[in-house]
Amino acid sequence: MKLSIKLLAAAIIVSFLSNAKAGTIVVNELGASVSGYAGWAHANRGGGTSSLVDLTGQGGNLESGQPLPTGAAKLTTGADNADGGEIAIAGDFGSAAAVLNDLIAGYSYFKVDNGPNIFAAPSLKLAVSAAGGTGDNYGQLIYEPSWNQPVGGSIAPPTDSWQTVSIDSSTGSASDSSGGWWWTGGFEQPNGGGGPPIRSASEWAGLFAADSDFANAKIVGISVGVGTYNQNQIGYVDAVTFGTTTGGTTVYNFQPAAVVPEPMSGFVFAGLGLIAIGRRRRS
Image (cartoon, rainbow, N blue to C red; front, side, top):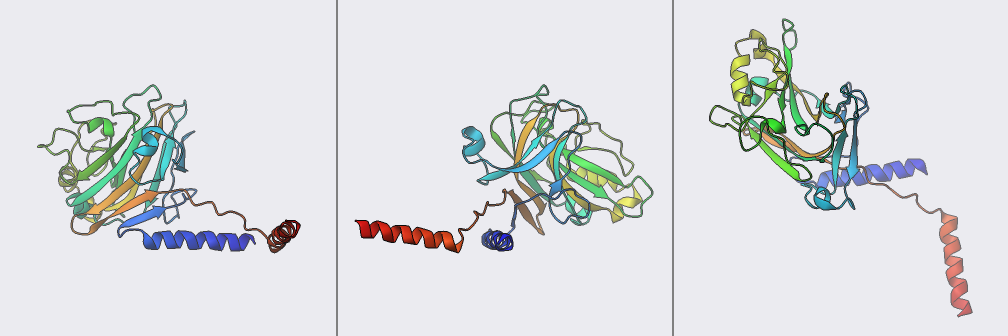
């Protein structure tokens, strides 16, 4: 019977995916870890947590304003600076130079008004790596909401409402003072440590090109999360988008797996039928 339930659940998920609009992937579960897993997985640190949740019945803007009802990924941190709540997917997402110069990306996030750091909110990260390089051949581009508000500088992002972010290769360029990406270090560029320089994806690609390793670099991971040194945070993310203007985009829709009820056994149905017959005869 348990096998039948699992097969039924799988059939529902496959049917849901086949009916999803082109370019959208419904994520119903998270792997235990990113290593060796083909889809989105937990990538937490310390006491951080990540989960897929149904927002039905939550009320307020969290439920009514969600971009892709009815679920989302929930990310939390605890009271320790070492905590980080994150989910990630690993793979070969294409040539880093080609993608960063033609990027289409984005996501929706919801920051709960909670925790001591008013600047912390779920961020989007792209991992860049070149196999067989000289050792300075890996880093992450990080899009922080606090560096991407309507005015320049680091500004606390809005709380208790969904925010939808759209990013292209020039977001944060010299002509766009609203922000961009900071870099964790690699390809002969220093670690920004969570702040400036903040640049567009194409501007970073131009700088990375000075390192010969970058010619072979790939985008090898996408992640969203609340990083370390952000205590007691609660955030939600959905509609993570990644692709290029020429190659199309993929939207990841986070939804918890549907709960399939235990089917009634044959003798229960038979018993209910006998009760119904008895009632009719007595009437």
